[in-house]
Amino acid sequence: MSFSDDGNLEIPTSGVADWDSPLSSNFTQLAQGYRFKALAGVAVNTGDAICVMSDGFVRPYDASSLTAPRPRGVSDTALSSGEESQFFSWGVLRSMDVFSGNLNIGGNVYVSPGSVGMLTGSYSAARYPLGVALAENAVLFRPDDDVRPEQITQTISLSLIVGSAHAFTMEVGHSGMSARLNLISDSIDAYKLQYHSGSARVGSEELYESVTTSVDGGALDFDINSLNFVDGSVWSYRNTDTGSPGLLFGLLTVQSAASVGSSDMSVSLIAERFN
Image (cartoon, rainbow, N blue to C red):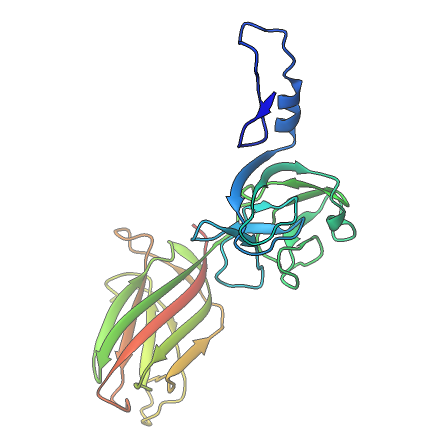
């Protein structure tokens, strides 16, 4: 017998007419779950949860990162950067001592934000449950079984002059919850940022408006007075525009108290979309 590249399945050397040829090892291999072949982009430890990056390489999943792709598998061997291996993707993974002491039998399995790639059952705030612990060193791994929000990041770049406003959209899904908002300007330090539930904005719900001290004393200006504004507060959104159900509608206005005449600006939003 020889082995195929995917799943380590045996390829019969006898003809299909040999109906009594033993093939049970294939079924044994399939019962262990499914694997996929890929290259490690960095060093990977045995038992690390891994994600697939945009360059096609896999690396240990960082649960503390707001921008890392969601985990897609587990490595059952240690690898150096650039090494190729098969990574466990779905099924039951057993007899791996690296899990001992970290899992609660019958409970969900997560990736610890405190240790990149390390599986754990005790961190309540960890995102993306990967499966269920069957024993202290056995996991029923099913990363896509659980319904959960999907994290997405959108960045909009634009150029504005004093007294102007710019309407924009962000593809963050029909509804969700924001996690972080950034607005960066190279010279304008007085502006107002709003989000609305519909593209017309008139009559639509105002989902977000940052209210800080007005730099020019106007009681109704609600200016942000900063070249680099960061808001970590959580606010929910829901799109009511049936024509564009996946968009969030923003409006950025430069106030009269801005320090210069024009500026290049960028708005970034990190959100957990529900659908």
